Image (cartoon, rainbow, N blue to C red; front, side):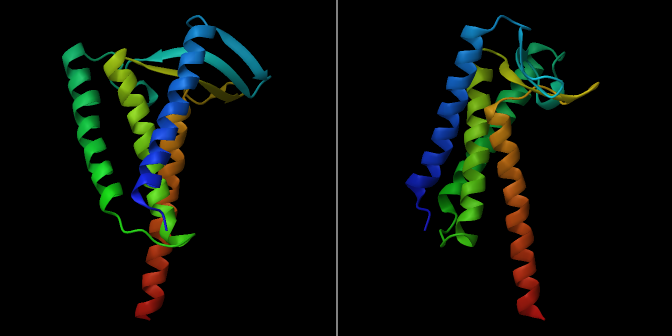
Length: 168
């Protein structure tokens, strides 16, 4: 059973790993520096994103950007934390998938919100591309949010299949 301290511990661990990796990049690479890790596929870069995912709101005025990115993100974080706290626990694997997924999303969201409040931008440093096709740079928090969201979708799909099997 995944108890509350473990759930929030996972979220906290994601936030700490995110913060450590961003700090390393901020201290080790100048803005726009690139370290080629796998030529033609993967680089470490130092980019600052003042907007949301894919640079949305990057050029918006300060107040609007702050209101949306900090205010709305904060409200969503409170909702996620409440859901994580009130979610009943279960046994592995089915009963732990949803809490683990929510913990990943919460930890990643907290990591990026911390940056937005502290610096006004988020440090991105993972760059994946193939030829001229490039995915926007991202970080550990973004990765945790994405993995958590995929796990949530999978968890809902499994729950839907289980419910459909019982009603037949």
